[in-house]
Image 1 (cartoon, rainbow, N blue to C red):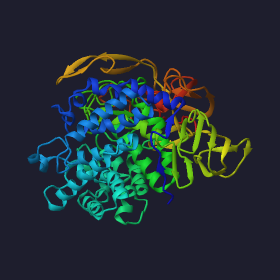
Image 2 (image 1 turned 30 degrees about the vertical axis):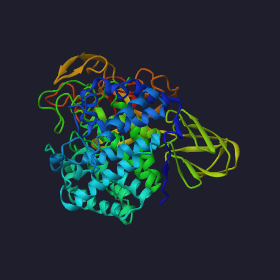
Image 3 (image 1 turned 135 degrees about the vertical axis):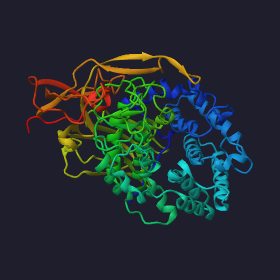
Image 4 (image 1 turned 90 degrees about the horizontal axis):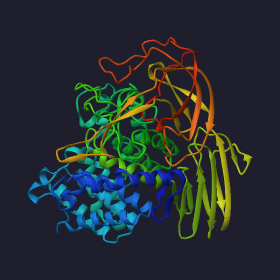
Length: 603
């Protein structure tokens, strides 16, 4: 395995469409949550009376790298305010979470695991030398309580035990003390082994369970990658076996899984929780870093370019709790909701349309993805995710100018004061690969860079193809992008206050009501690509950066009984009811209402 190391926010800066996406996030809910949402604004973590468990850590996990990537001094000041308050409240024995000493036994220590992960993120971004000692004392206290039996893992902490290893690995690398290895063994032994219940992943269930909970599933994928080394275990690519099994019975076209809340099968109208999307992205980032296996970076791209933007409003002031692959409306459903265990507002856009976990947790998606652009190992640097960005270290500057994934041209400008090896990860779907204008048949691009200035131009093509999906349906894919029939919509806004939490413009609730047709099938398999350029809103439904013109025909698709805003899993009939028409398919991530998996009417 070829392990890669992440650079910090001081070394990587986003450019182009990626920077604009992060700016939209900072101008939207992420950058303002501490002003408007009581669970962050008045949290027990900073001396208030609201949530004292996962919500502040979840939010900080994305807000911190967002602030430092954008070099936003106001946001950096907010991060320091929160971190300073959290550190100031740490007990003398090391305990850091906001609960009384007598309550610790009943306190789900998932929050301990999460806040230590966040503190490491803050240390990587800020270089604050207080942080290693703070994490050390938290984890040493955690170790002593777990070893003595004063506390045990239960609840979310038991099912998310592997999250501890982000800070455990950091501590062992810094201090190398034996008790850290012992803590790792205790946590794994008390944690849940998902291999014991994977038979439950085969059939969708309407019973809420920890061992089929979609977010636990996506977090779990990285468990072996982050834990095997310190545990002295051989790496077996367990994540691939788990992923393949989950995909077989619950897979989506965007490389994720259905889960609303629990695993929900192969129906393209079932939902996928936003928390699951960002946690699966994070798992793939960590697995790639620990293994160097390119398949995880490629799968990461598909999630990031499709599932993440699709479930966020264009201004990123609102989000869905669950998205659907075939999503013809985002409207309140009946009390008997179509999801596994979620409520009738789960696919509406809003501040917290089902549970507030996604409100806090979605923030990590884009910033951590940006930090995956370049990685390093020894004297080798890899362009791991080819998004527009700049890497600037003490002796190397690499600027990548590109509009990827919307087109496939990469221009690297390198200014180096040393010799080093430079690797560019080329995706497996690439065709007609050229380097500096010359065709090449090797996809393992490695360059020996000499000190001085170097320019590298890479371009390749990607063909639009129809990929077969379950239920005799197909999805259009070109490279890492999926394409959908975009459905026009009107917004129905709802402002209100519930349990002391305001929902008002721009962070109120919205229903998206369709105003154009959605009942289509592919008329043939001939397609025409129109490359444009990314604009102020990279994932815009009205101005998509690339489209594919396809011949489509209306069919009698029908609604899923008894709902008026959910289409059937498969159409009632595939007989065309109208002449073929040309439709500009847009990227899945641009379309808030969409039809994505559709039948091919003439094979």
